[in-house]
Length: 494
Figure: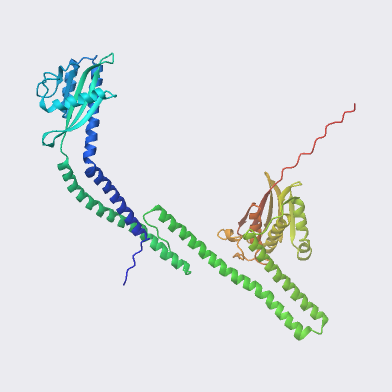
């Protein structure tokens, strides 16, 4: 079996990143410790020698410019930093010498190892604009020395003494060899650790992602029973949790889609069957009988209207859900619209004994909304109450102020809705487990249309129900602020 290596995988990218980072750090260490060791060592000694000179100057000023008081300080600095310190006056007289040899005269009896260096530094010091001079000299057997010269000034700012510092630069080649051998081992260990850590981290990241990918592929095939497992990281756990929730929603959506197809098929089949049956009856039986033919044609027209109403409701609901429908917003009297809507139910009161109780706070109650759509919401809620009302056939409609809003509510005294079903009543074609009293003909989309219209208006709505006692559906719209009448001042006759 041929294994294909993925250069874009998390495993390879993490391995490459860790290895590159390790090599970068090791390269910097090699450069600093091997290539720039001598340069760094010389700069460090130069800085150290300058600090010693500054310390001596500070101590000299602190001790009232007394050269005798510097002896102890200079001895300590010389011992601690392995440096030779010479201080001479302007005439070349020896003042302080931390070297074991004696210096008698600046110009005549200088020690052999410092004579030429002091003379060269003295010339540089005289030419310097900064009051100091430095040099690195190479003596016998290639011994190198860091040399520094500076003035000690008195309280008046005059150059009273000359200070020379000699610090040996020890050979660092042996140190470099030791570091090089150590760095070889460090490099090997660091690379191996980088590879091990990258593989471990890559496995911890890649394994749960691959499991999530396999589960997602199964979910894509329609298997909604899969579960998404997280890993060792918060982000992967959140991804798995989100996909698990998405799996549940997709499963519900698939179930709703199947229910939708089944319900639509049933609702379409009934009127189509009726139309076909009565059409055949007209053809075979009542074609020559005007009275029967007209009755059969009335049934066909009624079923056609029902079919047309179902299709229109489905189309309107789809347009509202896709936000492709525009609202015609205008101010209107909410109470007047409720009264006009309820007047169309007088026929139910007269023919079937339904009772409608309407209570309303004093108006006018002006709202800014799409009046036709709000009237459709009211009608759908009243139709739903008629459909599910109790044996008393009582439907209570109430309009009242609620702060800066107006609330419309419809109450029936039917079987009510179970608590676990109440959140589903707004779904299309949802059927409650309770049985309604009156078999009304409708599209099954009434409450779904109510929900979408109210969402378009950004209105609050809900349902309150208790088993055995009935349900109350309500929604609220914001009231418009009444316009203040213009105040005309009195007219003055002059």
